[in-house]
Image 1 (cartoon, rainbow, N blue to C red):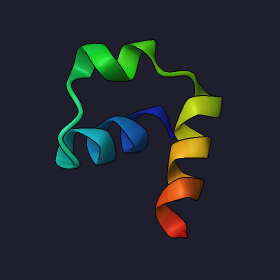
Image 2: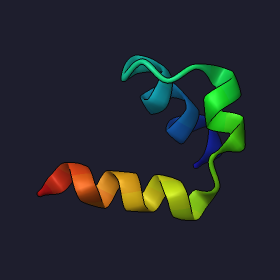
Image 3: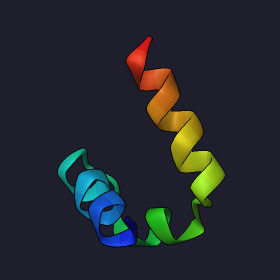
Length: 36
């Protein structure tokens, strides 16, 4: 899961340092926002 999220984030333009600061909750919220 972690590697998948990292790869997805990198493809979408996130920097690795930004991703490291994100929690799983932040990522789930962000994914939910993107589906609307």
